[in-house]
Length: 343
Image 1 (tube, rainbow, N blue to C red):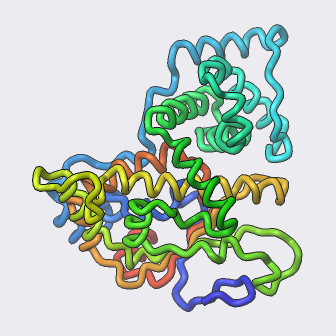
Image 2 (image 1 turned 90 degrees about the horizontal axis):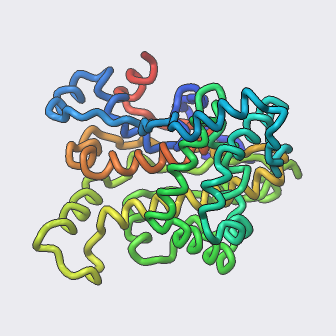
């Protein structure tokens, strides 16, 4: 229940950012979280031998980046570090310096993107210094070398998968519906959304609408995780990949690409919103989430879902949307979740 901007419920488990991964509620479906502490889950998934790497480890220290960084460290007086446009969001002078170093390491990658200046103007939260800062904070001890490698992979992924076209849908939806841009208008994306009920009305509501004062603050999204139909979406995705699938215009088919594009759309919308909110707050804003686990069961963690759907889903959200979620509030957790998170 939400009243006057406050969350009230008799069974709430709170976990701060040190206990959760940055992308958000999807790690609730992490195989390692459940099987490490629940013997039944270990039996159910005993035949699944490949564990999911939530952090999608990559080779951080490429020769080019490492050499450039060593050059910077050894001859800093001779290197002109680029300026940044989000000093207001940095926590310290040391973080500003690391962000400048990161930007220096990425300057050739930025220059290689032909319409980069135009993209930076259209999507400043994606191609600007502010997104670099999120990647920097994701890296251990704010390491600019590993952060630059992560962001480099992010750029390549966006180009390969046409993510800017999905971002354009967010911008178009915002211009038309203003406060409804978390709901995609494209039919295939909407079809996926029906399997994963969420509510972003509270995020978008003003303090005045909630009975609060004039101070802008982050408010949580509500994710009805216990009602997420992972079995249904997995069945439709697997059906789309069989030889018996109908043509691509068959509206009963949902492909894995449709599924992933929906979550990409949602995260693009989230970061679009967080960027605007960050400017208003004068500091980096994060998303808070309320995860309602009512009716959550082990059936939602089927091997088919874990292998075929969850792995690519987590790979995208964990690798390419760092520093998104600040807090997760868990409502009505079943006993297995309480046991797992209290270990």
